[in-house]
Each structure stands twice: as structure tokens, then as C-alpha cells.
Image (spheres, rainbow, N blue to C red):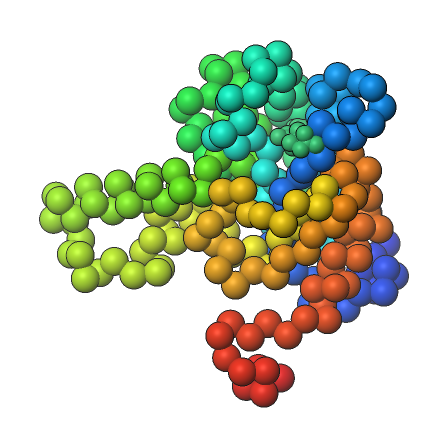
Amino acid sequence: MRTPAKNAARDAGLDPTRIPKHIAIIMDGNGRWARQRGLPRLAGHVQGYATVRAMVESAIDLRVQALTLYTFSSENWSRPKNEVDGIMRLIAHAARNELDELHENGVRVIVSGRFDDLPEDVRAELRHEMNVTKDNNRLILNLAINYGGRTEIVDAVRAIAAKAANGELKPEEVDDELISAHLYSPHLPDPDLLIRTAGELRISNFLLWQIAYTEIWVTDVLWPDFSENDLIMAISDYQKRVRKFGKTADQVV
Ligand code: FPP
């Protein structure tokens, strides 16, 4: 079991009472990192995986409760076959090789996305990992795999429409809460903070419903170079913001 400093957040100059409960990350820039070094794109993903390990440790130390990582989008299937296969192999490898350490550290792994369309060996590793870690609650690690924000909403609407059609619910019962309850990971609170690496100023079909009031932080740092210091900078910036949720600044202070 990792025994972080008694108060790693305070040691890092953060307010431990205002750590974002749920952080979501668009891990971008693996390809650029590899290109800058004359390496194949896959080398960037391998280094990106090392950053994932480090960020899970930092999230535990800082007492973040949930971390959602955009690991493979529903659009990523159109990449060259060797890259897609390589990322799938990495996901399966990570599920197998990190399981003991994640479990020992109280991490629960869940997956958001169209799970059934993943290769069977990847599904088997992930299923096992989710099953072994299902009662852990120190950190929820939500891997968005074969994930698309619009597809998630389509899947939720289909499930709700099916219930309406068979009389389980009435159309007027459809509200924000009901839609949230039909998303891939209904028990997760909406993200407080969304981090995007590698400088692009777009959402790329990530968590479209859940980020309605999420604070966004973008850095030029490429994902393989992203460090705990960068995470601390993002949280520090988040802690300076006033979250208004549609109210005036005076109403929320
Ligand atoms: C985006 O960078 C990155 C991805 C599509 C893959 C992310 C995968 C990992 C970090 C490795 C596996 C992770 C786990 C959790 C096992 P990009 O390739 O789009 O970069 P570019 O825009 O510079 O080309």
C-alpha cells in the first residue's frame, strides 16, 4: 500500500479541502512526442502509459477521488492498423501488469465506452481487472475506451426510449438526473476539472454531457512529458477559480 505524505496536497501548496473530486484528462501529444525524437508513434503511447502510472500515483497522493482518462476514442479506430493494435496491446498489458499494484492501493478500475466492440482478449483482461477491484474506493480509475461523447448520449437515449416504449417510464419523467443515470458510469460525479495536454483548444467528443460546468485547463506540455508538477499547477489554477454554475459571482462567494 502506498503511504503518501500525511498531507501531500498541503506540501504541494494546495488547499487540501478543495481538491477536485473528479479530474478528467484528454491525454494528447503522444504522436508528436515520438515524432520529435524520430521514433514510431507507438513509442509515444508506451511513454504515455508511463505517465498514466505516475498520474494514478499522484492522484492517490493528492486524494483525488476519480480520474477519467481518454484512452481510446471511437474515432481512433481509423488510425493505422499497427497503431490501433499497439494501443490495444498496451491496454491489455496494463490491465494485466498493473492489477496487483492498483488493487493493493485501493484503486477501482472501471471502463466507459462501447465495451462489446473491443477485441475479446482486451475485454477479458479488463473484465478481470474490474471484477477484482470492484470493492475498492480510494480512487476510481475510469478508462474511456472506445468512447465517444455523442455515442454515449445516443446509447443513453436508446435505453430511455426502450423503457418509455415498454411503459417503464413516462416521457415527462425524463430530466437531467435520469439522463445522467443512463450514461456509461452513472455513479461518478461530473468532472470538476478537465485537463487537456498538447495545446489543442477543443473537446474532441469527450464527456459532452458531464462537462457542462467543468473547469478546463489546457497545457502545451505533451502527455508523455506531463508530470506531477503539471498536475499540481492545474489544480492550483482550479483552486483560484470561482465556480458559478450560472449564478453571479456575488451569489457564490
Ligand atoms: C493521443 O495522442 C493518445 C492516444 C490516442 C492514446 C492514449 C494511450 C495511452 C496513453 C497509452 C495506454 C494507456 C493506458 C491507460 C493503458 P496522439 O496519438 O493523438 O498524439 P498526437 O496528436 O501528437 O499525434
